[in-house]
Length: 157
Image (cartoon, rainbow, N blue to C red; front, side, top):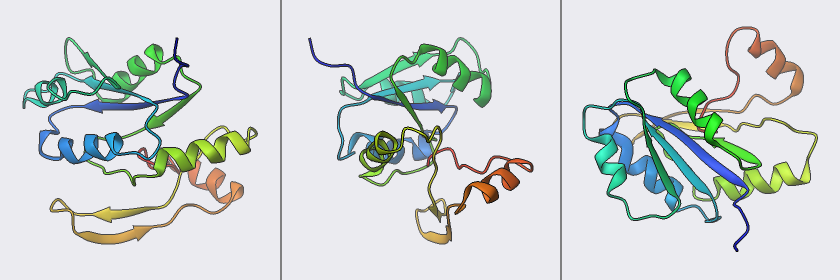
């Protein structure tokens, strides 16, 4: 029996068909190919779920919510279904760098004292054109300060 993948990529989808192919293909093209890609169709009405369901990839697990739960509740439902050691978040309108999972898993395995990590990111517009860099918050103290005001970690990082 093959070993269980170490990481599940978790994504909730609600009427994101316009960007969904790029987001899914960015995960499917990862240099580290052994993962589970758990995608929750959160009551999409634009054919997002059908698009995902038609992708022939054994790593994709599509769960259809009976109704739109909203992002937080949908993600919590997904977390309840995950039994891998690590979870990587992805949004349906973002594109992952090809070595994202490999680099993050290597880092987390080398640093078992780290429970959550994020990275900087490039902001792109709806056409995929570069808009700006959003650097990572560089240190623990700055992360804690930012956490008082909001989430210091962008979901797809």
